[in-house]
Image (cartoon, rainbow, N blue to C red; front, side, top):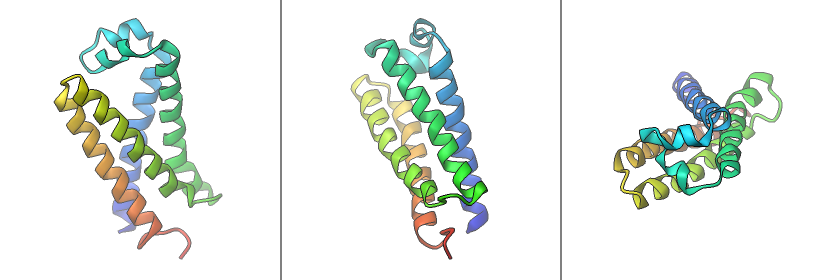
Length: 127
């Protein structure tokens, strides 16, 4: 169980770091011109960058507390927060008719839910 949780957490952290980096450091005009980034045209540049920073922080929150042993309960808390972020992402993509991206967000949500369940329960760091 622990290995599966670590693999899932690592994959989700990579997704969060990559997505966050792109949103934070790519100009909004370039993002809005890409197929997966058209939604950014509906938001301010500051909002898109803020989401990017949140995603980078999520990547850190999924890995660093467990690795350092400092407040490891933040791992499942971060996973819950990521799941909530994915609900918003799915709503945005469904409203825009971008169903493949909504499905991808659902996959990330399910992975985050698995991590939260596992780290709050059978694979917790406290026991």
